[in-house]
Length: 181
Image (cartoon, rainbow, N blue to C red; front, side, top):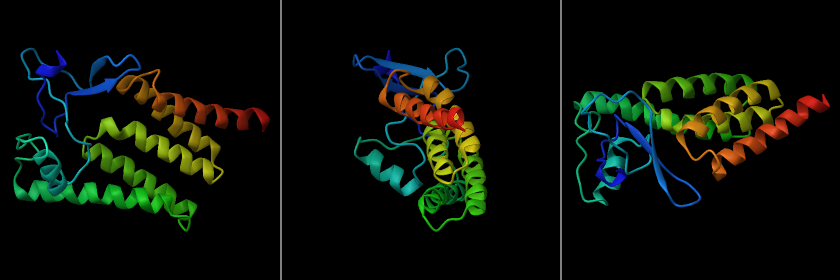
């Protein structure tokens, strides 16, 4: 039962999605051992320590996940990576960013997301990369990231929801470009 789940952040075991009929579902993003506690995150993934603590304070509890209770050096390294993810995201949106820099930033973004175990955010990251590469005229790379986004989004969220539908529309537009070309 979803109401019986608890909430560590780092070792997110389940993602909760809401479907059009308001039913809740949970999807495992890693193997679950028999008897292992099933957890969800109450806040957006990828936040640095200070922001997590502030957001969780609104829920009235102090998180005891592996990351929140890690030694200060470990949290600092994680915070630096998470802050870098935000910097990269905005740099990629900047109209003055050239294509070669975009390629480097996209690789760094994907690696940092992996390092931080932010699988649940991957569909969003890949969708952004799809749109950015498309805006640069690189339909092939846009298609690659779009397919990756769709594949994960169909698993991690409502396959009939607006997010997945938006990715499909974007891919249809890119596919139309290939058919015309």
